[in-house]
Length: 163
Image (cartoon, rainbow, N blue to C red; front, side):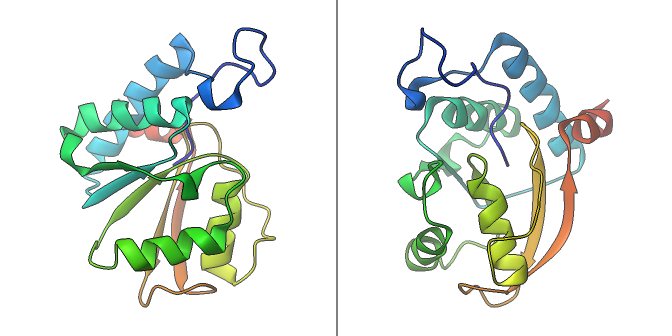
C-alpha cells in the first residue's frame, strides 16, 4: 500500500521529507480506503510501515479501522530510497512465519518491489496511486520472480467497495 495524500515535497513547513504529514483530505480519504479494505474482508498477520510520518499516519488509520494495533511494526527497509532486495532479505529473515503481510510505503519503491517479486526485475511500469493497494500471492518467498499479481486497486476503487 502506498501512503495517502501528503503535504507536497519541498513545502517550506516540512523541509525534512521524513516529517511530511498526511493532509486533512489525505486522512479523510484514507479512512474511506481502509473501510473499503475491510469490506473486502482483507486480513493480515503483520503490518510493516515506513517510519516516515505520512506512511506511519496511513498505517495508523488502517490499524484503527481493523482494530489491529498489536500487528504494526516500522522498518527503514520501506523508506523511499530503500533497496527492494534488502527489503526482501529483511522480510525473509525477520518475518518468515507471517502468512499475510501488508507493507505501507512510498513510490517508486513499492513499484520496484512489486516488479521485482512479480517479474524478477524492478523495471515494470506500475502506478501506485496515493492510497493504492496491490495483492501479491507468493509461494516460496525469494529475491526475484516468486509472486503472482492478483490485483492492483486505486483509492477510488477501494472507496467504492466500502460504500
